[in-house]
Amino acid sequence: MAAQHHDDDHDPNLAHHFESTEQQRQSAKLGMWLFLATEILFFGGLFVAYTVYRGNHPEVFVFGAHFLDTALGALNTVVLIFSSFTIAWAVRAAQLKQIKLLKWLIIATMLCAFAFLGVKYVEYSAKWKHGLLWAGAYDPHVEHEEAFETIEVEGELHTPEADVEIIEIEEIQPVAEGEIVEPVVAEVEIDPAPVVADPDSSTIAPAARGPEGLAGPVEEADHDLVPVEPLNARVFFSIYFMMTGLHGIHVLGGIAAMLWLLKCLRRGDFDGGHFTKVDMVALYWHVVDIIWIYLFLLLYLID
Amino acid sequence: MSEHTESGVHVASLKLLVGVMIALMIGTWLTVSVTHFDFGVLNIWIGLGIATVKAILVGLYFMHLRWDKPFNAFVFISAFAFLALFIGFALMDSAHYQDVIIPGWPLS
Image 1: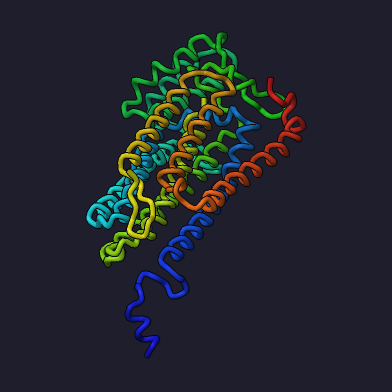
Image 2: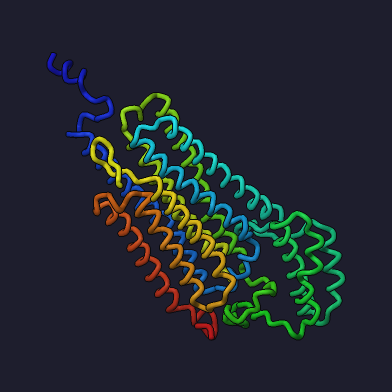
């Protein structure tokens, strides 16, 4: 009988093993922060791989970053920062019991998450199309006939050694441009011209070619020139897809968590001012944002 | 100025949240624009510095660490500290045998 009475006036949002709502909230928070710490370490392994490989083979990263569109990367950064803002605002709304506002802020955050994945889809499909993929799947190629025409024109140049390298440039260059703008053909003719016109004046730093060759200091490379594809350029794309892929999965997880929040909201969980669930999802989402801030810098903004 | 819930939890003001968001946007613009200048090896450190300031802003204000129990911040920061150790030791290790793999290492 006593137990029955206890259940009746017990706060449904307070689990039995907690003294108070505040204690429950603090426990949830600590658990969440521990989880976020493991998330940092989870991505940490990839950051270690990135750092060690870039430290030892900078030319691979300078080369690979040419194929990432800074504008799209920056757009995604802006989208994620804005979504961080909306979810932070959502926590405030939950704390102040502004349920209607809370609902719209969660939806806005979700829309940003979808926008992020949409941009990512555009980027991924461009790389897929041109074979700029991970490890064994790496097989760069162009599909536009125009690009091949250019190769022929410029292929007249000297020495077998130079020939080989120039063709590599031509095969790659249009791809990089194609990711940024739709009309590829016009760009193709203008951009590679300075590289090819006078091969003797090329200031391309020698790429590391294993035992017989050595990478020049990256800083000396002329930024306007497209670097010759270094050995193991595929490693850049392996790291790129692993890091952005794992991050993308986290964005999907965030969307799932926000759908759950909307379900809780409908059920009226937040009516009494219990904002812990919103708070936890927001913390998770901010970590996704923080990781992207670093990914954007480290993958897109090389060179 | 600062609001609180009924149970006394700090509520971040909307003005502050908007301010932090604007600061983050400016930081993003800054990160992109410094790449147009060539500071040599400093470029990556400038970029990492700006990114870290942005991460700290997100942590302090969006994630409420500023008003939270310090222990939560300690947990989170310790993850970064251990990551730094991990990266540092991995780099030290690989730097020890790169000259065997690549003749002439280190560069320049």
